[in-house]
Length: 365
Image (cartoon, rainbow, N blue to C red; front, side):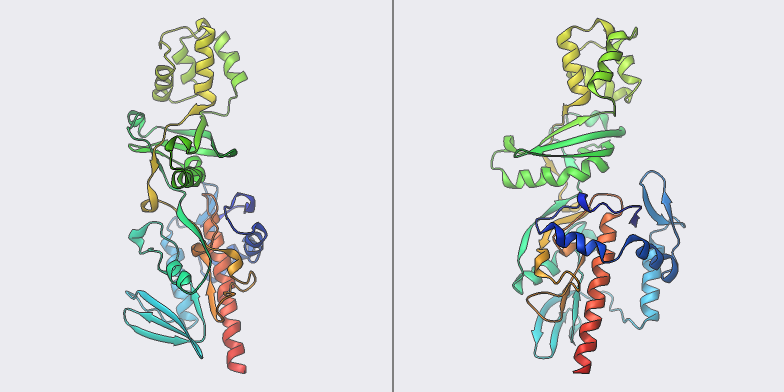
């Protein structure tokens, strides 16, 4: 719904970063929260475990229903079960082509989303229409999406979850994310994976040789190599027991097997080479992956309309008067935890205000 605090530095864009930051600042979080609680009638509270604000009722549909009702009270007309098929400028504004006829209007706000979760109707129509109208696009790709490992070397760990620190390295650059990590039947998910998945996805899209794709390394706990070493050298218990004090039992067993260490070996009796291998497995484990779940399970679409294609204050297209672009169509996305909702609300509000001002000016000429 909304993050507790906005983190602009964690947003991803191929456009000028100062444009992204300016668009995020256009509607501060305090104003967004006030709008939803006062105008929409959906009081928010901190959701345990996610660190984001969510309706007190626990029902996301309360926000949807509240927004629809508020729009109706303000005179908005809805046309359900209607798809956008075309968009063209006219001498007086715009012609909007739909599966239920044409609409002629002075201004258009294009807020059709990206291509993530296509079962909701997101098919990239708006992005494609914007491209036909001459807007510059940055290559699109699925982002915040689970990763796949084939063959499923860790399928036996499906359902195991823990907090971890993941690092992705590609072409000399690296990024880190900490948070929940989940083993799935097909690979990996959880916030730490989703927040870095775009690096893996883009590396696979770019590199002809899979061997040059992003390398993912994971630390399975907040403990560093020094802390693990001290415990391993002083523990009087079997190594599997020592490791399982801090990690899920099934994961501890798997890591020891992959390091080639007998489970019943005393922790303090490990040979130097065994201890070195185990320390790497615990703090810098190379996570095998071969692909991703794509748009089907992606939370957002990466890439899109370049931010410098719109006026940063009004979100009006720099190429077409009276056309306003916002939300996931634009080249920006943030991490898990409500940041992408904040981006949608902030840019959507700016585009709506810009369109209203355009209409007013058109009527008073």
